[in-house]
Image 1 (cartoon, helix red, strand yellow):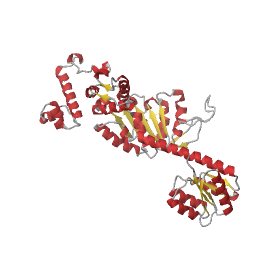
Image 2 (spheres, rainbow, N blue to C red):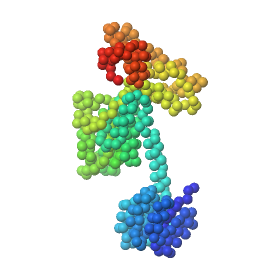
Image 3 (cartoon, one colour):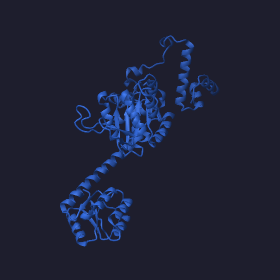
Image 4 (cartoon, rainbow, N blue to C red):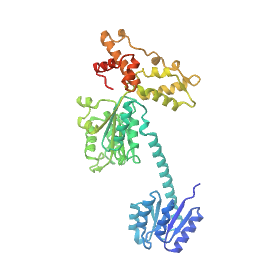
Length: 449
């Protein structure tokens, strides 16, 4: 087990020696200093876990020492010792970074209780730091997988989103990764070490919604037996993620709008205004502007949420990312190395993926279970995917032949462009047509890169 290092700064020799002996007996490594500047000089080239210092010292007082040490080593924790008449100074020391203060004279037990609490605090902070580092690694910009131009541009947008405190609205079909994007934005933002509170607006009962979001005071309504902090207050300083924001009851949308405009809330049953600093990220699979035109969502709230819009494309519109995603999820679920036959990727790129990333993850898990001899082949794929074929005119809803042929031609051109990453020369080669012919068809069908 790691031995904790403690520095003691005390000009009275008898106190300094007594404290040192007691702590060494308890298993700590101790370095003592009679003068605060000697401690500062020592810490220029060394570090320690804890500094215990008197507030009244020669040449430099404890507050000055505290500020210098925190500047040199912010993670060193400090306990201050004070006489009865210096309590106000001790409290001031806590405001600028001291963990606690000890009133002289104090017992060994009092000292050890404070040191043990401080050690627990340091260990907790280390675990929190590791957790935050893990989240930053898990939710890096590259964690939104893909190589398409859409993904390249999305990562740039997420960088902007992470470094703004303005409201962000994430839109996209079910399974396109809206919550993942919310995580990426928060854990790459300056608020990464502060609360990240998620609210699923779709599952909250309407009668509980206001209390859940804004909180209430004791006696505000039947059953309100104590004060409650709402999700907004819980997220203060950090980020609030509102999933399925379209499900917020219409009558409560005005309260959310007021918070976004004024940065303040009132709990249910209270007249007290609470100022909050929160970054709001909202997500929806619906078109909020259309809902506002029908009277189901406030138009002014839509514009307050939509300061920085991020739209996530469905998989069928970025087919070049499908092999990367499928391979990633197969690797994630597989305990051994599994080979995927190339023709599997070809079929997967033709499938519509109505469930998007969530559906391809589900399929990958199933394929790992069903893999024969650690190989995923066409025979492993579900029937609905294996039977994909180009639709015939007779099954296309009685469309005119020229309209059907145009759709097929557009589809083939887009597929060639996707496979060639937008390179027109390579796309023309894949299609077996001259480059000038491809260019004229791109202009005819208004197809952009």
